Amino acid sequence: EDQVTQSPEALRLQEGESSSLNCSYTVSGLRGLFWYRQDPGKGPEFLFTLYSAGEEKEKERLKATLTKKESFLHITAPKPEDSATYLCAVLLSGYQKVTFGTGTKLQVIP
Amino acid sequence: GAVVSQHPSRVICKSGTSVKIECRSLDFQATTMFWYRQFPKQSLMLMATSNEGSKATYEQGVEKDKFLINHASLTLSTLTVTSAHPEDSSFYICSARKSGGTDSPLHFGNGTRLTVT
Image (cartoon, rainbow over all chains, first blue to last red; front, side):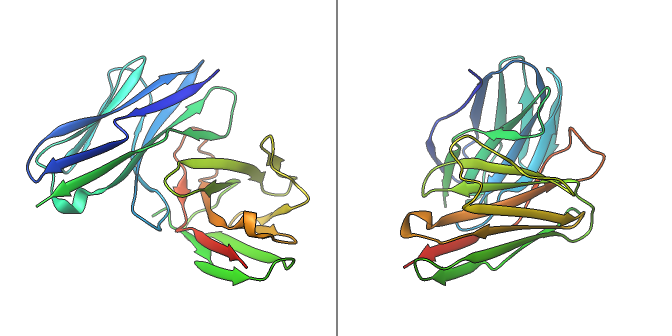
């Protein structure tokens, strides 16, 4: 069965304290992996797409990487405004739909 | 670019009535749109996939007669919750994929908070 698992479920960081969020997947035929940010009461906001192992994408304090089994979202020197739930999602071969992981709720304390 | 507008953002209705939620792609055409449901502190659960001009594909366990989906144009999909009951109260989010981009990401609306009293 295809599975997408994110860890940790929740993460509390001091402002400036770098860390990484994990998204591991056991799927057959990955076509793409997406990272989203979701603020409370809002829809997910697209961050990155990764298509192949070894690929990396960066945006401001965020960097996403992909291996054959997992993806990491690295947050460098986070600020309080980075507090949100971060979701990863996978697009599988032969499907249109995207399956989401359970998310990591990040809190950055000033 | 890639803006998705969802309306209304909040709706309260009485049990037994129907509610329609609209999802529009404002600056791109979307052959495929998706409807998700999200319970508190949980991730997004796909309800159905809609393709412009054809019937929606519903996920297992989702009642197609209760959640009517119409995707009449390349920029508009609607979800109608028929004969709503309190257990239908939830956060409904639509998303759209740009036409021609089968591997491209989904872009989401800001969701609709439905409360059925």
